[in-house]
Image 1 (cartoon, rainbow, N blue to C red):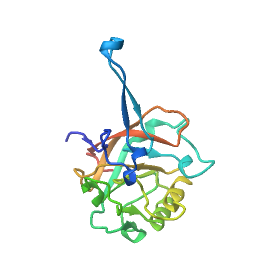
Image 2: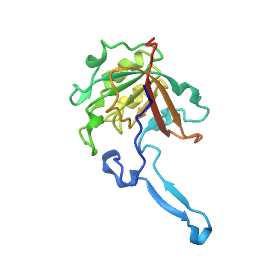
Image 3: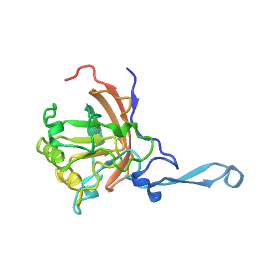
Length: 210
């Protein structure tokens, strides 16, 4: 089986969180053949636009950043769980029977993967589910929305996970991915000491399933 790219494409008119203009990438031509002899493009983009990783500093004032992060930890197996039957939010009750263990990296595939435009009622991870995952001491969790939570005062889902240094991966496109175990290549940009990093994520079904 070939690798599946589950990353969002970076374009000037891409889907962004709550359709906020300040979240949209801005491409500017900074050099032309006529004036400079070469062609160059400048990109201005929020680090939380598109497929990206959240580090603790995103919601926790003294939280860790990307500084010193070992990128090799993102070359690993992931468990993809099909949650497309879920309406509104993924709760503890939805996931407490799933095979989730310590140090797992898990992805939740929801109805979000089939939305072409930003859906203000996107499926999110509820506070009780986040607390449950934190109690399991997982390594990371990914979701096919541009935010892992929606309309929860004080961002408790982020805090429950990031306070335990659990990686949050947002902005996945899991439309072509089945409920299974995959090998993952997730490579963030090498930007030092920030609260989020854009990533490219590739999946391929794991043959060993162990």
